[in-house]
Amino acid sequence: MERTKAAEKGDGVGGQHARPPGAVNRAMTTFSPADEEKQRGVRQMKLTATGLLLFVALVYVLAKWAQNSGAGPWAGYVAAAAEAGMVGALADWFAVTALFRHPLGIPIPHTAIIPTKKDQLGVSLGEFVGENFLSEDVVRQRLRAVGIGSRLGAWLAVPEHADRVTAELSTALRGALTVLRDSDVQAVVGEAITRRANAQEIGPGIGKMLERIVADGGHKRVVDLVVTRAHDWLVLHSDSVMDAVQGGAPGWTPKFVDKKVGERVYKELLRFVTEMRDMPAHPARGALDRFLTDFASDLQSDTDTRARIERLKGEVLGRGEVQDLIASAWTAVRSMIVAAAEDERSELRLRVRASLLSLGSRMAAERKVQDKVDKWVEGAAVYVVTTYRQEITSLITDTVASWDAEHTTKKIEANIGRDLQFIRINGTVVGSLAGLLIYTVSHALGA
Image (cartoon, rainbow, N blue to C red):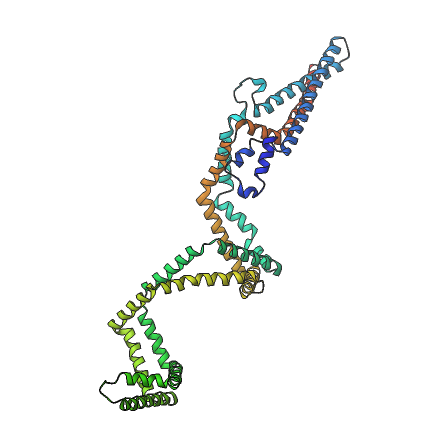
């Protein structure tokens, strides 16, 4: 009982999902309270069957005594019935006992079948399961009869069930994201993005995109923004521009000349930027359009330009700041997904729920979808049973082989021994009736 309690404590937290490797073996070497109760029932039935044997033996002795004492013919009938009942009881006692142990401790051949043939029984059980439960035809037939596609569709079409599946998926997603180490995922994401970027040339793609932007006039807003900001900057920093021009003048020129030149350059620069800002048809804008068009063409066809872009791409990707930016993208994505998974009203969960309801409705109503789901489930199940059938049957045979013979015998006897004792009782009764019938027929024929 102490070992039983220890085993029960060991199966507490985690249950069957956290059993240690020897848990199954210990289950066959310990008796649970239910096993103890069954064993008490077996002992009671043994006493009943043995008591019945002793009773017919006593009847036989008394009947023979009465017969020898000159009692009527009835004594012979009773003695014959009791004698046959004893034979039947002893024969069935021998048969039932031989299943579990040697009768009277005598090593008679073909007795103690369960402890001596335990391993062979395990092999036979494994083969039986493999042939009758793990065959492709049986699996397909049973799954086809179940109709998983239609049942699953009808179940998913219920809003409460879709909510439950959505909640479970959200929990699983949060758990998976929590388990993953940020550093590992960041390294994988960074390496994948870098490898993909290095493997694919970006020049032609950028050229086509730039060509379409220029053709659609999409770059004009950028030009407007640049020249507007340039104009505003020149207005605010006029002194800085003029000082820069004067600082670049030769040392032998008079300062008032430098100042005049600086003012002139500033005014011309401001006029140029102002005209470019206010005139959509300014020649500089047209020149910029032609430059961008030529550059887009070079990105797609010029070898030197494409090579320079690739070198620039490699330099940019190799910078630590860029790698840190790529790695930090995972943190942002994970936070966004976790927040969406936790929020019952988030767009992510609402879309998943709607998709499940739609899928359930289609699976429940459309035979074509049901057939696809059924075939997928059948294919997956068949693959598992055909690929791992040997491992499954080996699990049965190896588990049975690892059981202790003595404790296995006791446990089996505790579970089926009570029914086997009825065989002894039935043997006594049937034997008595058969003996009575034989004795009666014999006397009738003899008369």
